[in-house]
Length: 123
Image (cartoon, rainbow, N blue to C red; front, side, top):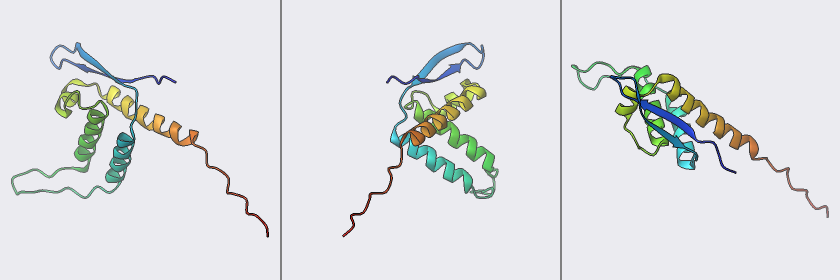
C-alpha cells in the first residue's frame, strides 16, 4: 500500500512565489513519539519565564508555535529550517501538515485491533 505523501510548499517571502515543495509519506515511530511528547509538553506549559531581566518573557503561545514549527521541520527530515518555515510557509499549510500527521496516526491506532482475552482451560 503506497501512502499519499503529506506535502508542504515554501514560498519566497518577497515575491510570494513557490520556491520548493516537500513531501513525506512515512510517519516513523520517532515522529509519533515526538508528536505525543509535544502534546504533553503543550498541556503542561509553565507561566511566562524570563531568563534575564533584559529579556522579554517567553509566552506559552510562542513556545507552542516554536514547538509546532520544529515538529513540522523534523517531520520533513530537516530539509528546511524552522526559520525558513516561519518565513516561507503559509499558516494553513503548516496546520494541514499537523492535522494530517494526527489523522494518519489516529488511523494507525484504530487499525490495530485489540485481541480478546485468552480463554482459560478448566481443570
